[in-house]
Length: 373
Ligand code: BGC
Image 1 (cartoon, protein in one colour):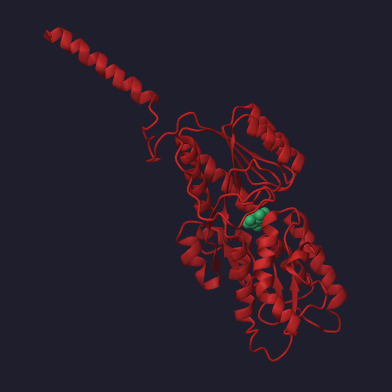
Image 2: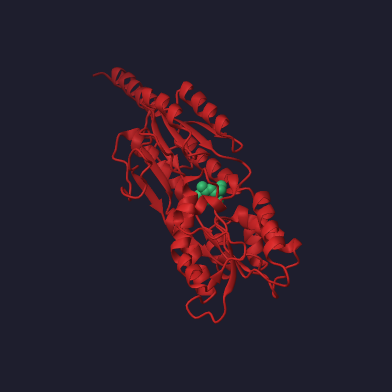
């Protein structure tokens, strides 16, 4: 080969390398450090923008996927089931290959998932299980039963229920009846607390104490709305806490309900440091972390949603490359049609003394978000 021909051949090889690099499926984009996914089109639907966690969940997953070269459609449905269904229909029509769905009503998506199946779309239930459909491929969530257990055990320990000298006035709340997680949260807590209600260590003046886990929805707050929890607490306080009777502990399954309950207590004149009750929560929303620092909320069960996003991102990488999808639970989440292979992440308790080390040092919240600098 002459010099000239070799030079031309080198240029041609170089051009080929460049072309290959441009459409390569394995070149990491600047800043992501990860592989580019090929032919990756993902539809994400989240329930509502009214709760901080879903905004963070959606934004984080979208960013990771876009960094890996995926086309992403991210939608929020204002807690309206029909709106979520039509968003999913649009994503199917728009060529999504994978759907990530944090459902509003876990029982309402059967028909739309049938359409997804016909297009061979893989469906990941995100945080909340989708019920009554065979067309849910994977479920990624936190250990929802454990969330409730952490809340129940926290109250048990703080109230020293095993050695309490006098009965303690207690009010339990449960989450939205259409959210499959809510029954797990309640069961986890109730398995710890119901025996103390039965023994009379915990007294529920409103009478709103389910006799078994199965009756949890009777005290559920629709759509997890703060104002509905506040109105419910207002009713309980004004009807059942007369003549100086005080509530001493409240089981709140999450932070949005806790905010409503705390507002109700404030307007009924309860004061931190004198008669303020112990209140539980879940999520680590900014307003609630402020309430924890102010002594108005005793704890939150923190679910580091970044870990959930990372897990779902990994599932998508595995699905996209045809690898086996990693799960760690194949027993717990029966959706009525099948047990959905799940990946459960551990939640953790955060109290006032752990806000800095858990939430701020890890970068989940900024100190300035919660008035700490
Ligand atoms: C989530 C909680 C959240 C609640 C209200 C549940 O399904 O797991 O983290 O607080 O919905 O949005």
